[in-house]
Length: 400
Image (cartoon, rainbow, N blue to C red; front, side, top):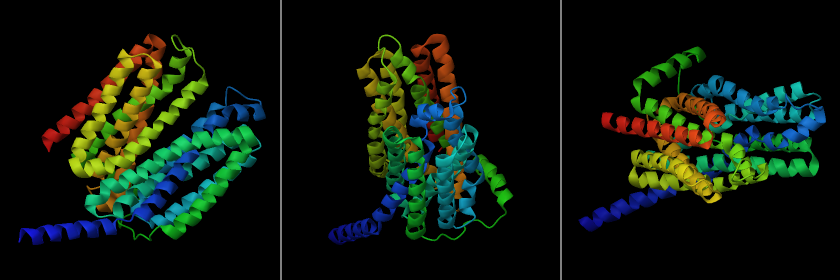
């Protein structure tokens, strides 16, 4: 009898593995990475763009505009994923990206370039539509693994964007990079239209009522509030480090240039690997333990930053921080996307908005701390934010 039960369990496991849509998830990962990359293409090209338009003080508009467009789309468009066919919405947004990228390539002035970059960022919110979709196309026990695969594509897209943009910009000029981005966006629209399954609307309500329902969800679901606070703090930990790294490396005892700071992005490949592994880790140990481990990695990263002010210490700390952030993020998304399957895009809107707010606060406070007390203040900030995340996690587990 036990043999039969074991055989039956093994059969269910094999059937579950056979039903796991790995090919479609890899397509979602590539598309999510290709979408989010549009937020970062302009960053390595700023010096070239400034030379073209003979400006310097206002060049920051080009770097900020994609983020502004992305934030506006995040709040206004992402909730629509619960109200309309997400395949059609994704294709439309990819076309918006293509138009934005082409407009960047032919922009005759800095102002029009900044506006075009905003349009480009507006379309890039496709990434946040594809992440909840990955949770919809798998069975519940496989959700963490699916999210890990797609999130690894997001991280890979962020890493590849700066490298690809810098190479093409240096070899062929900054306008060529945006022509390439436009071609990629058109290819993305075609791929999404062909590969994505058609999805029926999950909600039957007005567009404006979506926002009221999001507030109600935030009040109703304690795990969602915890996840928003925790991941906002952890992304603040992340941006605090990266916002002052170049300043740290330019000062004693390092006295190194921007190229060294940029090379630290290569270490970010650890985050991609962690995101891929996180699904398996969460399936085995649970979302709560996965998130606790991720928070612990971020906390220990700042301990290393504080006690070992050397290139070795920075590299070890970045590895810990990226690994922890990836695992904590997949753990949190696995938890919150299981709360209401019919409202996953609205839940993701609240979650990602909190991450952006936390990241902005972390960067602002780190810059302020650096100006007044240097690296020690930045380390203190990272430790405090990590401890807040840890406290929120432990309190949430006690309530459960």
